[in-house]
Structure formats: C-alpha cells, structure tokens
Length: 388
Image (cartoon, rainbow, N blue to C red; front, top):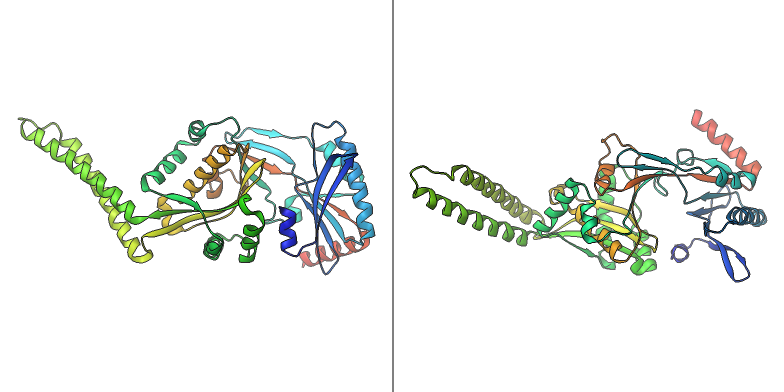
C-alpha cells in the first residue's frame, strides 16, 4: 500500500528484499527523495526480518553491503534508514525497560553508517521520537474498557449518554476534514498535511485507512435531557407528596439534590439551543485518520474542535477504534506521537495515557554518506550557518 501511495504521489520507490531460493528473508521499501544537493534514499520502519531466524545479523549485514554497492552506482547523495526499533519502554507507573541494541547498531556501523538521534535528524513529524502504544491482544470488549483509567471511562460513558456517534467519512468530505485538521494544527503549532495527501491516502489505502469523525445531534441531545428532567420532576413530586403526609419532612435533602440536577440539565439544554442557532443541529466534534495494518492500528493526523470539548468527542473516536482493532484481532493500538514529557503538563500525553498503555522511545536514524566528500562538505556548511 505504501509503495502504491508513493507511486500515486509521483515518488520513485523500490521494494527490496533478500531471498534464498523461494524464501524471502528480508524486505524493505525504499523511496528516492530528489534534492538539489543530490538524491537521498530513505527506508522508514525497516528493514523487516523474521526475528526468529538465527541468521538475521548476517542477512541484515549482507543487505546493507549490497544496497551500498547499488547506491554507489546510482550516484546517490546519502542513504537514511529509520529502523522500527525501540530503545526504551516506559510504563504508566514510571517503570522503565531498556533494550540493548548494541549488536544491532554494530551491523550499520560496520558498513560505515553514522547514527543520528531524532533531535539530530530534525524529524518534527515524519517519525516521532516517542510513541504511545497499547497492547490489546487477549482482551475482550469488557476488559478493554475496564483497562482504561477511571477518568477516561467516565468520559467515554458521557459520550454514550450524549448520543455521540462516529463514522468513516466519504471522499467528498475530505475537504471538511482537512479544514478542521488545519485549524487544529494552527492552534497547537503542529504541522498538517496538504489536502492532496489525504485524498491520495483515501484512494490508495482504501479500507486500510479510516477517516473517522465524532458527531452529535443536538436535537436528540436536548430530547434526552428533557426526558431526564421529566423523570426527575416526577420523583420530586412524589417525594413532596410523601413529605406532605408526614408531621416531619424526611425527603428535603433528596429533593434539593434532584432540583440541583434539574438545574444542571436545563443549563445543558440552554447551551445546546445556543449551539444550534450558531452551528446547526448536527455538530462535528472531532476526527482522526487511522491506518489499519495486521500488526497494529495507528492513530495519525487528527483534530478537535475546541469549542465543543465538553462533549468528549476524541474519547469516543479512540474508544470505537480500539474496539474495532479488538474485533479485527489487531494486537497493538498505536496512539502515535507524544512529546516524552511525563510531568503532567503535556495534555496530549495525558489524554493518551488515560487509555493505559505505555510509551516507547524510537531508536533514531542511520545515515550512510554515499558521496562522502559532498556530504561532509555540506554538513560543515550547515554547522557554520547554525553558528551564525
């Protein structure tokens, strides 16, 4: 699918592999990025091997050596590989598990690669330094919900009470989706893709990409709370009647509590009527793009219309897609990028943390200068410019 996306985007790409007879031992998808300083070749999330194969190190080493030879013939500028390897896993309780990748890294160093952390590479959006993930394998619908924090459970329950629904939008609605992601990106200082990107993803990935939005019908919302108010007032009338037949009233406190609930629900109705006047009966609360793969469901570009945050739209979107992943027997749900700040000040991290997963620290990138003189010269120029 990714190769077809590159082709539709008019980007040169190559499906690479190592085979022994008819058995595929390694695969990787490489694309060519045309640059005024020379062609850059890139492999994201690879190469992929069967980690149960005891000869993996030799297979990867062979692949890197042969790829180096090929790119020399192509007069490439440099090769960048961003492996799908994690250096660290951080549980919600702060427990840290470190992964030893010295042997893996040595395979790249032996071929002349240079290691660059994400700060050094300068990736702001293409590949996050930190990701937040949740393994859902072995859970059922009930235990999945119970695995969330109490606050997140409360927020999801509220979306059901409010009558919020989610749906996968049509191609014709992508312009609306993009307008909302752009608005959110500007508000939060994030990067957003062009409309053409979303259109290409929709065409290329088909059912393997879902553009989900959360909506609320305010007429139904008002009707729901009007029914609650009627039931509460009936209870109040019954309690008043009971107390009227007694010498000493016993229901005063309960009546006061129920009247307070009526007031709160009436405020919700007044607020909803004002929103209808301004935005109409059906409101788009939040949306997100998800990629569906056999090994994981990935949550990518998203938006939240801040003026409707009290309806908890993003919680419903995530909850429904987590249930979808569970139904499709996908083992991992990837909430994707977080800042790595666990101090409590990062709202994005705190939101994702409520679903009770874990944070992983991605490895970074390996750079192989093919034209060494040009690479070193341009890196030196960049350092001089930064100092100024």
